[in-house]
Image (cartoon, rainbow, N blue to C red):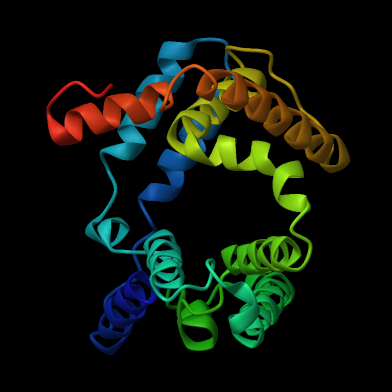
Length: 239
């Protein structure tokens, strides 16, 4: 989580010490062009704009970020038995939950409101340095669910469809991307919703995905993209 902010701050500090003129971020106009293309009805123009954006990322965008950090934290939690016996790790789980909420609040009330400094991302580097992320709020959700299931086991069967959706995480992720893009882009429905309606639609979409996941896994061992991924990984058909 710290790799990219550190790289940004170090390179920015070196440029400041050498009095190198500040160069506008070339990614910003490309992102603006992709956003403008998403409002048009021509899908291929949108595809070209997104491809142009994808192929012009700098080396800093290839550095590890918060997604890798979340993956590693989850892997360590599994290895140390946090999910197997949550009641033995209540203090740690509550600590991560509190940290997640405080980090999210601090990010949106302080870090995200700071003015643009002379050196790009300098405020973010000095104050947050990659350790304060809005995504850490997921610790609160995960911790709440884990403690709920540990103390009230009857909820395990009630929430089982969520687990089925998790077994098809890759398929459901791609499904969400395709569905949301088709519903919100100009080439599709072009929907523009208010935040409360967005929340309701998010629950509805996930409900549909849970239902489809339960139906699919009642007949097959893996989701379609999970099956393809395993086949490419082991280079042999998967039953």
